[in-house]
Length: 192
Image (cartoon, rainbow, N blue to C red; front, side, top):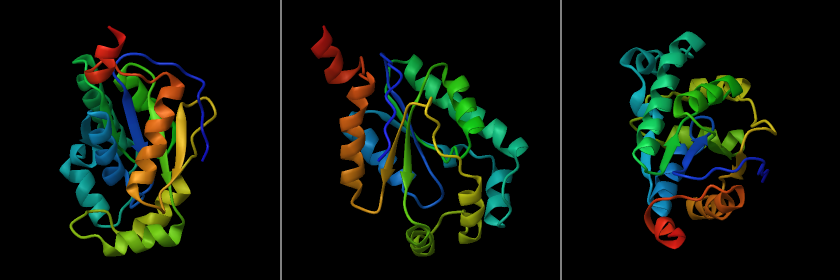
């Protein structure tokens, strides 16, 4: 587990759960949002139909195809935090430049949670899931594209070969250490 705690943020939290296909972004993201009492946004739901069609056909997206989608994800985060709500977003955000676009759209620093698992585990998960547009043939492309979180990015790396509850527990224990305290819900009552 790698932890970066260089940045402090107050106000509504924006946590982005990142990783390759089948790393558990949506599953962990939803469970984390529930644990935090936060809104949940699955970036896959914001892809235009043309992106979904390309990926379903086994064609990796170009940066030109990704950029409008990433901007939409950033706007979705900003909408939630501007309304005073915490938000957890599941988004691949495989490259630093993609995470920078998300930060720009959100309007402030973000806390990134990078989910990792061995390739064999990811391949098994892809083979077992139904109804998702991302084919197993793109896993190696995603792994090749993946850029680990940089030291100057607020982030936590979590191995997700164990139970979802373990991953969520690691993240909820980490968030207060980076000053990512919320001003909504119970935290607001505690701070006056």
